[in-house]
Length: 189
Image (cartoon, rainbow, N blue to C red; front, side):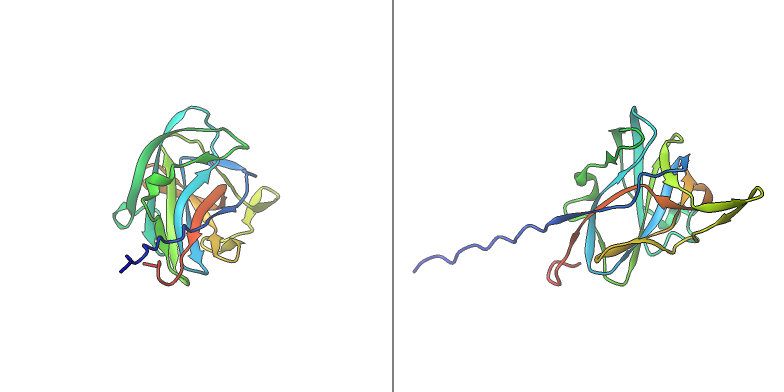
């Protein structure tokens, strides 16, 4: 009798969802939601920074929206803290995939997961969208609403937050890339 062949799972194709590099503000950190349209796992993030130095970056996550939890660190899980060399404006600074674990952070279809990328200095770029009428700002976007979408997910309006979960700012748009894989039913957790 011959031995049964061992089947290896087919590696999942990594996808990249780019938002923008058009920034208007720089702050310590940025919180935003991902709304999954399919079962996905977030395997890395890339962001825009003004820095070209080595910077200590923390990445946090939580199930559900960040809205209402901007200053509550007790509901957030630290994915990790790492030193990365900033690539400067107009470029993306990548966080290593191994920071996100072997399978990434799961988001089931129809659910949200929030991410918070933060530094100890004011170096994270994001875009605020508003109209200025006689010195009065009127925002064109609202916290948590969809701002970018592809067939797998939506990236929702976020907010700038200071290191240590202090003082959230106006609604704004994440500058960067969400790297992810689409999970099949058998692979979803």
